[in-house]
Image (cartoon, rainbow, N blue to C red; front, top):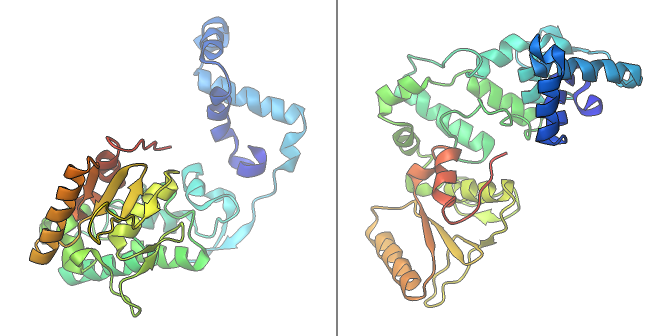
Length: 307
C-alpha cells in the first residue's frame, strides 16, 4: 500500500486489511477490544497500521511530495495539497492538476456545471467530449473515480479543459428535454455513429473495429468487465452478422431505429433468433446514457460485476 499510495496510504489500508481478514475475526476484535467502545473501530485499525508500518521502517519508503505546475492554471502547487479523493482520480505519480482546478472540473466535488449554456455550446461540448474519450459520454462523465486514470497527459488536459465548460444536468434537460436527446441533437448518437475523416469506424480498447461509438461503448464495457466476446458473429442463416456474441448470447446495437430498411433487418434477425432458440439482447441508444443502464440491460443474460 505504501509503494502504490505513498503518503495517502493510511486512508486505504483499513479496507485492505478487512479484505484479507475473516469477518468473524474483525467482529470478535470489535467486540473484545475496549478501545472500540470509545473510538470508531476503523480509525483504531488505521492508526494501528500506521504505528506498525513505522515500527517496521516501511514509512521510510514514502517520498517527499513534489512541487508541480498545474496543467490548467499554470500555477505552482505541492502534491500533498490535494485531498485523498482528488489524488485517487489522478494517480499518485500523475498529480498534474491543482486542487482548485480539479474541483472546478470534477462536478461531483465542485460546481454543478453551467446553468446558462446555450444549445449550440452544449452540442459542441458533447461532440468534442465524445471525440476526446472515444465513446458515448455519460451525463456524469468526469465524476467517476477512474474517468481520468486511463488518459495520457494530452488526453487528460483536453478532457479537463472540456469539463470546465460542462453544462449542468438541469440546463441540458431544459434545452433538450433529456441527455439522450442532447446526444442525438449533437450528432453523437445520430444513427449511432460518429463521423470521422476515415468514415465511421473506431477502435475499441481491445482492438476490435467498431462501426459506431455505440458499438465501441458496448465493446469497451464488455472488455473492462472481463467478459469474453466475439465481434461480428454470423447468424445461423442468411448473410447477417451480429455485433457481439457472448457464449451463446447475441448482442445487437440498434442505433438506426426508425429507418424502414433497418427496421426490416431487425425484424428478420429477431425471427432467426426465435426459430433457432438464440437469446438476442437488443441495445438501443437510450441504454448507453449511463453505465448503470447498460449493466442493467446485460446483467439478466451476462454476469456483470462492478468493482
